[in-house]
Image (tube, rainbow, N blue to C red; front, top):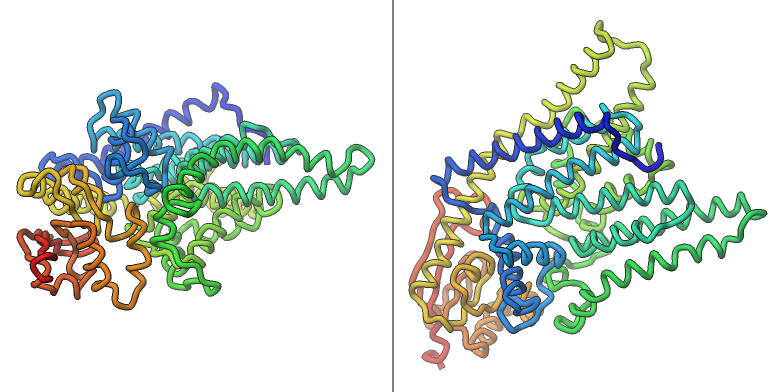
Length: 512
């Protein structure tokens, strides 16, 4: 492995061609969605609208709140919220402004992949090929136009990893490295795990170095060098941790407590689905990925630990890997780099080429095969992206407009998908998933869940309930409490939590 990667003049043609490929794949997805939706802008997931709501409130001076004036730690990506708020403040209109920002982050992730690839291999072709694998990965392009924080977190985690590897080689941890890890943790809570793995790796490495160099410097001196970077990391993340503790009673955002249930027995189904996505991303690279994990375990163990550790932690938390496996999308660049390192190692083991081609021809053929192994799913994912955007527009955005037109401005809504409906209608809401209404979380795990929810919603003076009936069948069946007044049924559901969403008018008081 080489030291810190510094871009030279010779890198720019490779980098520009990589970014051009990234722009082409983004354009393919955008054009497919534009044609499919008849030019209607939109995002492929309701969660993006949740970020928009937080960002708009922050830009308007209402702080980190979903309902204006009610602070809540419902954002899992406060740094992304802050960036979106800045875009909105200067006149950006959602959803397009959010998509432009996520597209920029997608392109920066390609650049960061190239830089780390060059640092790992010293080979521009290998670094470029790793970047192209990311640029032609349909799931990563989906994220690049999703207005979600995936590209931002991927970029920061790659930059932090590159800085960590440089510091590891120098036996000295810099403040800049800690700052990158801190920003990554504010982009996604998985960043805390990444920093913990980095600290463990660096501590073990300097321990071994100190044992071999006791005549030069004491181990205490080495360990003390970790204090300033760790303090800086804490200074970056503590404000939001304290905000979460004050508003929700926990250090981590509400989403963690709403969606995660720790168990000492890992969820094997999660690991099975994670393996499926790893294979689908590029079947040809799987053996090289396995080889690369082993090759990197000594010179750059953080990459191997991160790639294997994140899915394992999610499995212990019994998370659900839905929506094209988006929780593991930030690993796509890391997995690409590991695979390319494995490919170079396999190439080193076979010095005599089996193909009757000269060096340049062999590289071109290998590049073509690998890019084809990733890019073959681009048309399929582009169609999925278009369908996802159309689903969210047809259901969530449309219901948001209906609510805005048919309910009083102060009507309180209870929702199980809170993004677009809240943003478009600008009504106060109670979140039935618990992300911004954490009081709901214990009710969701009660055996008499729907009855408890009905009592809770009555106490909160909820006037309209907008839900997927299949999520709350007992509650939806209570015609004495809920009167259906509007519904949307998707012809083909590709991303929503149910095919039908119903707006109910509540009659809690009449049933008493």
